[in-house]
Image (cartoon, rainbow, N blue to C red; front, side, top):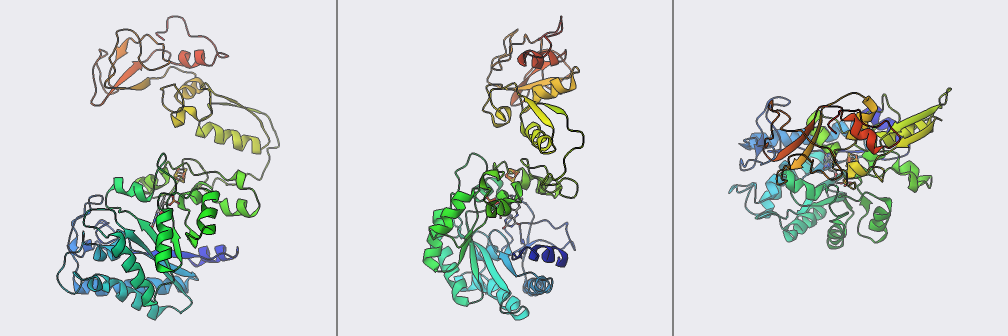
Length: 438
Ligand SMILES: Cc1cc2nc3c(=O)[nH]c(=O)nc-3n(C[C@H](O)[C@H](O)[C@H](O)COP(=O)(O)O)c2cc1C
Ligand code: SF4
């Protein structure tokens, strides 16, 4: 941690980290195999653990762990910490959805905030006064029986009045289901900066430094958020994953070079799948040890590089090739770059499939998904722009070559020389082999 912090401080920036106890939003099979805990033992739909109802000695241990962690972070040179409240244990005490205790930890707002105050007291007792401590908290859970906007603002006011926190990082919504999570981490196609105005209202109500992040992916919106007084600081999580050089490019006046986050949220999925935040839009992210973000060396043998397919991989290969000094030519069958990946194309094939075929130049199995509602004509493929006469309709896993339906989908399947289809589309390539069924 010290090494990481020192290397950031060399660039005159501040470094903070988030501390949390996930409460019910976790699994027992980690760390010391302790049971998950939560105030009233309510399961979270997303993580599905059966939490133990938290007991006083659990609370004591967890409060002490928070304080110890904060102390360690300051010792490692960090400038501050943020406590992650929303959806995690702190918020599980706050929210009526997860706390219906009738003892000192439930019922009145004072009781529901008791755990938070204990943590803040314990932390403040262990760190120096200039160490920044903030909260990332939900103001409006937007769910039945959840924390309302009024209660959320009241919680924020009480936190400010405690004098124990330096900033509020506000979110709106809830994260107990994957569907709800997309309102907090909006994906591609959802509105940009959906909660920015709301965060501005919290700032106005609390008159306290407010941060906020939720699909503020571009500099112009971030600039507006600060200039209009809605936020004191803008969180841009995925924007930095897609382009870690975003600040450098901004300070160098190269805004137009910023690689935008497209909101695919592969980064988050990848964490759940493989524990690493990779980016669908930037292959170097998370692979910095082997793949640089900035191409500094030129090839000593510049040549001509031909790339077949202007999908994400093809365009990135083209960019790197060009930066290394090669003359790059990109072939694309559809009218626009990225068209087959974004769905903008009328070509119903999956991303880059025709290019894989032309690039490998060998017969491959070739599947296309067709909505179940499509009728299956005897001889013609119903996929737009696919003029093949189809001989076999079947599920990928089926052994029969007769037409069958597959739950939710049907597949057009051709085993013989699908490469010729791709060749025909890219008119400069050889025509279909005689006798192929395409
Ligand atoms: C890969 C990934 C990891 C995240 N991890 C956390 C986390 O540990 N704690 C947290 O409060 N939010 C986390 N978030 C949510 C972000 O902090 C942020 O609220 C969200 O991505 C919306 O902001 P953005 O549109 O700028 O990405 C994560 C998001 C992503 C994409
Ligand atoms: S994978 Fe990359 S482009 Fe997609 S949302 Fe994450 S950071 Fe943005």
